[in-house]
Length: 224
Image 1 (cartoon, one colour):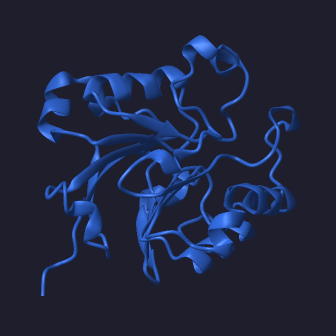
Image 2 (image 1 turned 30 degrees about the horizontal axis):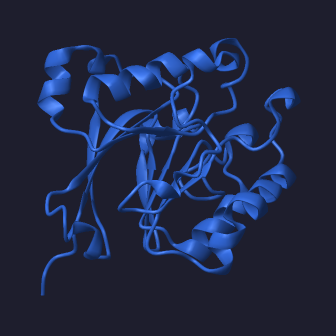
Image 3 (image 1 turned 90 degrees about the vertical axis):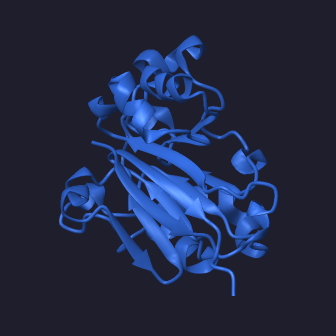
């Protein structure tokens, strides 16, 4: 079953030309078979963007984009290596590493599982820091307008699974969280944590564990 969440955006400017809520369907880790049925998809309604947060087959991500007629962005997870991922014909566009900041009206920072495909998905805080310096360095020096962060793993101590060392969040991501304070952070990876609490607040940020699928409605701030 697709969960639903409404997030109030702190900036009214993205809604000047689009007064309706922006509807983002985010998915990761476990295919949500609820979405296989056309009637269920119709009940969810229009989707402005499909977001893949990792550990889903490329065919599944492509299916969601096609089924909802929406653009797709995604990050690759720790299990997204080899197999169909080696065949460009199976990989949706844009792939991980694409500059997703081109999506409007919200700047998007994409953080796939850090490291090379040849490293057997080893978890390394050092690799996480290298990724953040490379991918998010300009954002950290000069934060953009309120943004959305899309990652596979969560930040350390924020919506992660502290009981499992491999599924803990990354310290480097926690630095990004505290520095950028994005209104919305979408991630996967911590599937067991999603069973007890799939979203939380950390300061100004709503963090959402999208394991399975979540429909997020982004709404403008209330008018004074």
